[in-house]
Image (cartoon, rainbow, N blue to C red; front, side, top):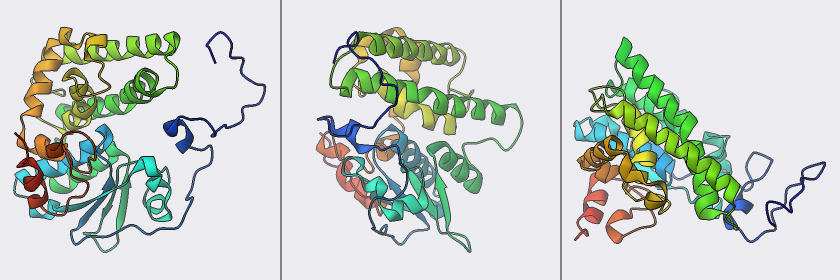
Length: 286
């Protein structure tokens, strides 16, 4: 139905009978839809995720910690296929009642600790292992500023622009224009910040970079929504410089393929249980 022809009803009713797969997955009701326990591997950290930008944040962080030879950061990463509604299993809902990836179970303590929301997982790992988040002072505050900027901004890029530009049944001028304008404003904010700093929160690499790169870095590198030309991303030269710099980090190359089931063969690793799993896939690259 066209934008001009739609009149909202007096009372909204959920319609999940349409042809759009992604529009039919969610429901106005939370909670488990079926019984299924989550698999458990041998490492202290159990990740349940998908290689979308939100999932990449955590796997990049874990690979960065492993690159520092922190053995306690070893992890098992199990695939949660949101297209198949895996996020609504009783096991996954037990870890994250919001049914969104990623979700982490930290089994290193006396009791298992469930951690959900990507920013919360990044903070948990940074504080547990003492890396990528300053312990105190202005740099810590700046890191949090930009970490939470990402949490507030990325939904406009993903659920807003990405949905209406790439996934909606009909291309509608108003929502695409509205969210394209906001995404370009966000890129301008980042570009001005990166014109003065090597990394997003300052001169040091942090969890803020790990949170922002999977969304905005992939976007300006042409790896998100096939929208680089539409958004004229080359005009954000400082974001582009940073995005390329990040993409060359070995841990970013490794983390971005975990729980990924799309792309080239050397970009796909459905599950990860050891560093050799990633090595095997990356060896396929030309």
